[in-house]
Amino acid sequence: MAQGRLHASPIMSPGIRGAPGAAPAEAELSRSSSMWHEPEEGPLWNAMKKQLYRSEVSHVKRIVGESLIQQNKLMWNEIASLRQMLTDFQEQNDQFSEGLRQQVQFRGTQHRDLLRRQAQIILEDVRSQAAACGHSLEDLVPEVREPQWLDFLVPKAASHSSKCELRCRTPTTPSTRPSTRPSTSSGVSGCSTPDQVTGVPSLPLGRQLGVDELSGVAQGIREALEAEKEALLSIIGEQLQCLEVEDARRVESKRSEPSTQQLQEFVHKLQDLTVSPSLRTLAIAGPPSPGSRGPLTADESL
Image 1 (cartoon, helix red, strand yellow):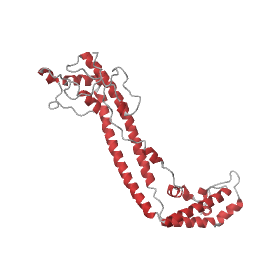
Image 2 (spheres, helix red, strand yellow):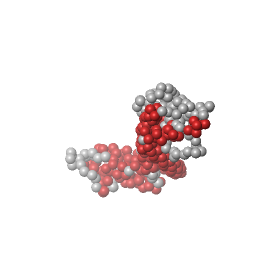
Image 3 (cartoon, one colour):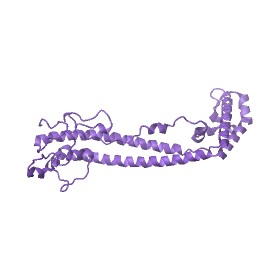
Image 4 (cartoon, one colour):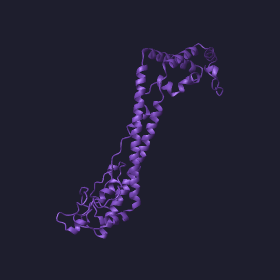
């Protein structure tokens, strides 16, 4: 492998390897965008292809492996689709959440606040009585198991979905910047983020490469593509996780607050429970004996 081809240099534009005074025959060998086109196959491969003469591309591509190039291309397309899906999903959820927020503001009257506070006070009283009888609040008031009532009566400081959203950042494009690292190194970054993919060899200026040099270049490109592949797989996994978070966010958003009428009916039910014979009977009976406790009947729980 020729020495000097591994020196760091920026990714070169098409034809930059042709020296200013290159002969016409050499100029004809440089890549001409007006005469030769290949489909886009991922930014890393396309960037390296621009540094090769036309006659070199097919040889290097054969050594690198067309299947690897195509795999990365398909993963780039999949990431683009997942990004668009996630963006659309997030926008829909934002619109849905804004609609719910406006509904809550509309419902946020003093009367509703009083009803909620009244329900909370009665629930605490029922909870203490239930505990004295060896039962839980949920045994007597099954509604508190429902997320709609639980979230309304016992607000959470922060939802799980909002924490997950902080981890779902839009991934950046893998870097194609060359490195001074030898092409025989692994080329795999210790970080899963794609912008850490480096190790692409730079090429000598103004001349074609020999067969041995092309083999070395192809090996370096393959290692960089393998690193890109690992980074893309990581991004796909992260995007799928973000979609799951948005789905959970949508489900949680659908748990709208109870209406004022529902809240009034719930408070009336709690008031009836506090004076019900069933609750007094449980208080007189005391805690159940070990192993005898079972679920309350509909009449017992009202």
